[in-house]
Length: 314
Image 1 (tube, rainbow, N blue to C red):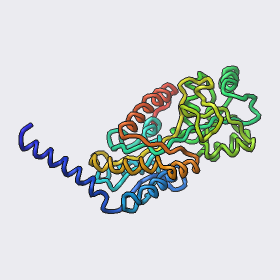
Image 2: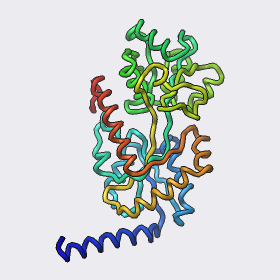
Image 3: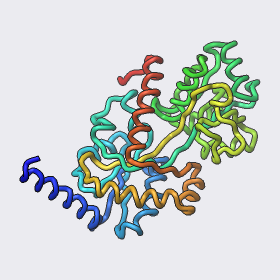
Image 4: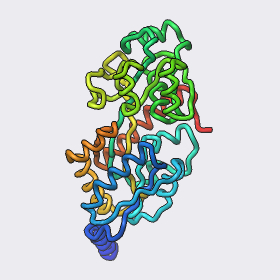
């Protein structure tokens, strides 16, 4: 390396390190989806959990779901604007056209939480476990149905992945969101659903729905005593909603490291874990590299399943 290039490289490294030490000197903004949803819930917990350690206010900026990543991708990479988004951030491009690249346009910080789907059926359906459901679906191809929200949502992906890995044809009945989809299965209008624990476990406890399995890789504390769908006969099945934090691409590594440190500390704390569990989600952190690997893995596996099912962006 030529001497003047070496000086420039050392100066850049020193400037990045100094930026990390001085950061932040003003409020930090987390851009996320509209208030009331899972993205907003996670963003507000993170904002409260790290503001004290950063010594600055962390503001949650709610924007339309499709616009939030576009806003952050185009923002200056100075460490003062972040994105908190769910799995749809990297799965969404398979089902809708977006103006950003989830890998190229963002600097990953950490995973924040995970929520596995819960496979539930209406009590009138004569099945007590996943193996019985698969047998019934194979005996009646195209006759059973599952309710779901929009393409790309966890309740949608739960059914698509189940059909693929179990080798069955359970028909999707679309609804305008998770709430009406849940109402449909509870009323018997549809026969099953891949729902979130926070929205469904009370109905399982009351007997209005029957739970057959959980979509996590290992048994989940969000659904105590419930076997995984994978160990119940659908090998390879994993379906979870993940939330993660991102900066715009080009954000100094020292700033990314500082934010990762504070968020990781909060997510691993008893208070952080407790606050997330109360909302029906499991706090989980990762390194930036692990987040990127998770994204690439899901884009590979889920992208293949959606392509095989003929699902493409409009």
